Length: 371
Image (cartoon, rainbow, N blue to C red; front, side, top):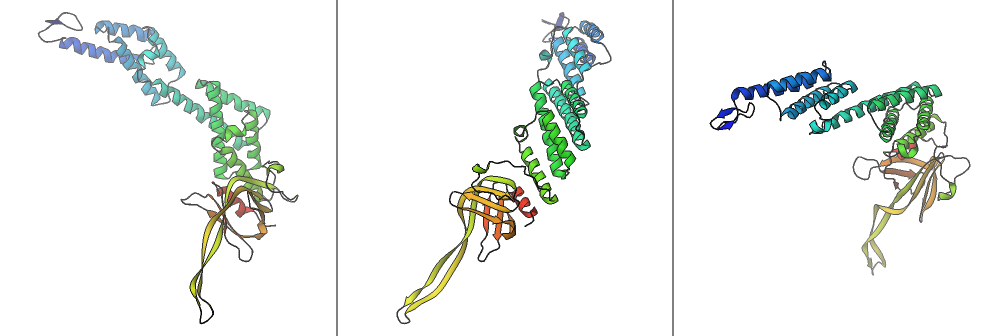
């Protein structure tokens, strides 16, 4: 005859516990779990009541499980709302320490990772909001930047992010602000200055912002704005010796596209007929077929006056006033890979420039007015 698991007295034939003892134990486990989640009690008060409940319910070996159940329930409840605050985190840690337990002893499911992720997301949201306010407000004085930095430091500190993680949060927030400004086409001079000041203040460079192409898209958007407003400035700096073509003094380089494939429509002719001895000549038809053929690869440059191409065997420039049509080149699918150009000349055939990503080139060529 075995003894009861809880009271240690004989439990009866083929039984491991008394029904009443088990019910009392289970009720005690639930009560202890509830006490762990009582944020209205101090850790000392909770610990005292937990010990009393454990003694009454004869809970010993399963105390750790009861504490773990309560801790998980408390953390999940907090996550469902605003997350685990610093005060609640401290209360739970102190309570566990009263029983010589630590967070790792009760977090078998790695629930605390969700707490950290929620805090990091909350910090990121706050940083994004602060960056947006700074850019929309157009305020870029030293005092405004110092206030912005203080608010950002407070947000990342509350999430307990390290220096490297905090920097990545700021960079990601600036990237999102760039995408917002570009998408909304709200590219004012004030916002350009504000963004530039934010870049400088937080020491954020082009490489930081171009990991997903945000900086490139921003510069391209400003170039389109400049061209539309007729206030063109050089935003792309490329040493002339590195270009396979020479620019004229009267033009400004707008953009350079590397690794461009150049195609041209070519005509092939076939004779279908035979030579007649009686007539002394060839009788038949000439069949012509058009096909797009690869010509060369090189660099495409767009300036305020010309389109330049410099490849291994082909080098030329086309004045904007000599272009009669510009069409997007899709190359299969719905993504613009490049542009088709038709020149204003007798016998001109469609010329295609495959840029990989041709949406900007297409918009730029459509926007530029011929001189």
